[in-house]
Length: 393
View 1 (cartoon, rainbow, N blue to C red):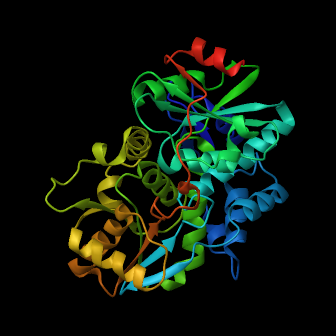
View 2 (view 1 turned 90 degrees about the vertical axis):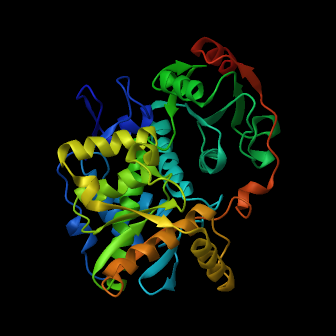
């Protein structure tokens, strides 16, 4: 598999991941006719081996089998623990990493690839927005990798992610926080403009959720989960995802496109609200990725994606069941997945299908979320010149 931009230029996994965002209108799109079925149907294999086999199958021209295994052992060390919730519904706990969020694994995969890039091409600077679990996961993943420095930007007037003090450059770490005068659009535009440039003596990698390494990690995760847990599904196999996880949905559909024989995906929307359109539900980059795939396979979204209403009372009940079982408290949006899954099964699929809901920890209980938000190292206008001046210090 390779990655392409809107202009049709193709890049290897390493090339696209080191840029993070193309010069043409982004994001990068997966490209190729690779087939994951031989990897996921390998007999008697572990989650790690499934991930390594899928990685080698997708990127045989970029990553040799030994590196595939090392990356899998580092980033896909164990299958997400599975907790049976109800007939036909199981929760997969993605909150086992440093921050308790689903972003930990794909951030770790990006960090591992960039660590290889540093060995070959010298120091790099990782640039991303500081917001919620995203900033936390990237800061944790990049820490301790020689040659990588992380800079998190956030809109002035909002709060940056809470971070362990020892990660900060002011405390001896390799992380800087910069406030940008403007909103999220200005921050995103600045990151996109900086991708692939050389600022402050280092090449810039845009490290947001649409970075190709992070998309690849999500595809590998879906493939390895299916391979590990397909025997637990009595018939049809669905993934349950939060409505806001557009990149996750895009990655899930690309996994299907590459041969993972899942039945579809379930996304919730809240009771009392108008059923969401795909554009609002997916977010900008996720929508572009899904739209590209829908262009290739017209009607794909309608055939594979089920939006179902998530009643607040049902979501609260499922959250309570997890609490009673001693599981870590999950994010409310994840409880909505369970309620939506139950609604879908009640439409005639119960006993014939299973929904594997991907859940993460509530930020209130996330391991890295217990620290205060740091003061910014600088405050800048959303311009490359001002960002460059700060990075040169």
